[in-house]
Amino acid sequence: MELEYLKEIWKDAGEDKAIAVAGKQQLLNLPGAPSQNLVSKMRRNLFYELLIVLVCVAVIAIFYFVSFGGQLKEVSWTYILLAIVFIIYFHKKNKLLKDMQCPACQVKHNLSLQLATLEKYVRLYLIAGTAMAPVVMLFFYVLLHYKHLVIFPSVYAGKEPSAFTLLYLLITGIFTMLFYLLNRWYISHLYGRHIQKLKTLLLEMEE
Image 1 (cartoon, rainbow, N blue to C red):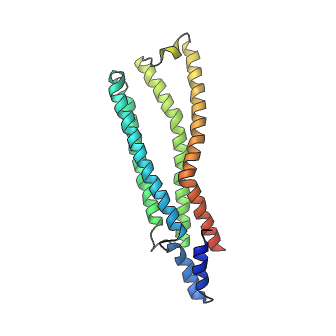
Image 2: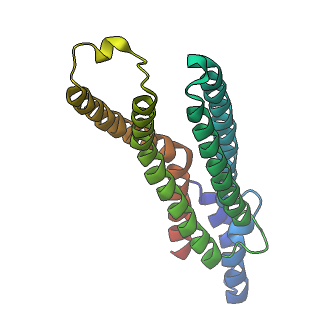
Image 3: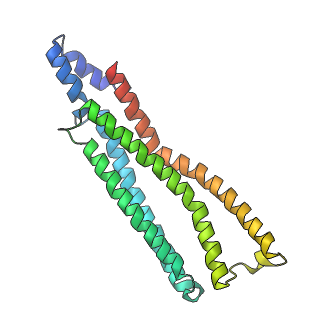
């Protein structure tokens, strides 16, 4: 159990109330404490995620800049804009996680407030990330319609415009649902499980 290490130190504090109170406030500040390890893991995951996003955006942007005779370069600029938004999100979230590692300010109450803010960031990430799927699909539909481009002729063949639109909306709905499930698992794996461990740690510290 992750708290065994802390419980042993706490037990060594003895029966002196002053020492016990000070110990409760400092246990989470120890370099090897579970809270520090969990936050470090989330910061590392965030850094890896940023690298993956930047690489993917670079590949997609280059592809649409050079493919289709450059007629879909708007897609490249859109993904670049999304990357900038993600970088801003990364900066704010990384700053929050860095503050949570601050030994001088990581008292239990402050850590609880920071943890609540982190949960809001993660929830926003899930909602915005899921909403991005139908928005991108709609953007492609409008862009192709505006430029009168047919990327997959076989899909259009023999279909009325209204029928194709309904098919496109159905595919968009299915894709959004699958993307939501994948995104929820992904976020839970990178951040959610560590946040839950931190919440459990705080609850056990109160006990």
